[in-house]
Image (cartoon, rainbow, N blue to C red; front, side, top):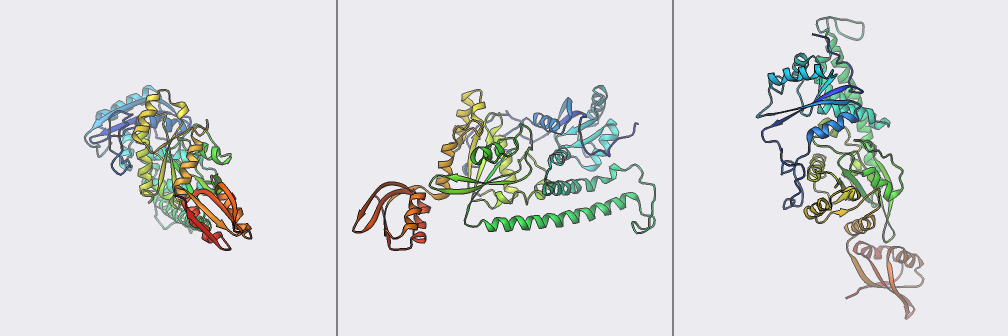
Length: 451
């Protein structure tokens, strides 16, 4: 058997065979499946939602720089404990890998270290699972020091129990002054070094987390909005359209790994802080979610989440359910949300958009790149954050210039007059701003709600 090349931890420019195992109970219905949401208005994974897993795995593989040369699917009641697929399928995979000169076999399912070893022995081909593929993509996308630390921690926590399969010299005993005990194997040395590095990275990320929390606390009193959504749904494009942030945008998975926060001017002279976040994914590896918790701090502490979904795809419900599963994992499941049906200009069949709006009647149809629906989005966000508009009459002293300027900036003035030495204005403004008037006014004032 030829020697396995398992020391390279990427699939760059390799030829890949993709494997999907559908287990009993997995959702395997039609991809579109646009039906009414549950009673609470939220979707949960497993409720008549499905995404073409091999198609997504293929996009992930291409995002990692590899070429998909073949795919294979098997249905099983439960995974085989030794190889996940049956022995016959292992032999078929070996033949397929030889025929297509494949460098790597990629499973859509998560594999145990023993299953990976057995599959590599049976197919004579490097084998990885979906989690390792995603970690590889994150490693290639990380640009900032913070993102690199988080990705490295997630990779080490994933690889630690799998170190044994990376070594072919386990019987060789090594010793060294100040580095290892007498008779300690190389594997144990590496495990000790990895544990030490994991502890060091965790300490650095805790410091980042503390700094993020201080930044969030410093913004207390400001309106905070987080953009969340499936990877490549258009989060960075929306941030650019609303704030001129000039964030990096590319039509590929996980183009953005770092949080960006920009000021977004809303109606009534209000400014909110709008934050982009890392894209979510179906069954996002737990280690990755935990490592990127500091990056997701903006979403965790946001007053409102803009949940953006690509409505031009055939798996809108599946994407929404996947994002809500991650939000639940980071403790944001009950945070106020507005669902945005993005890329309406790319919907080829209008009936698809109609079905999406029927399934999500409160959603905002829009296009981040085309500009459709952005004005309505601003109005909807303002109402959710500041309450419904109210028409009131405000009486103020002409000496209170600061208050009168505040009214001009934050209200829609419908009429203005002078009565008994007072400035009387009939204005329209959100409920929350009306409640702010006593704090702003410096002299005698009166507010009367219009009938």
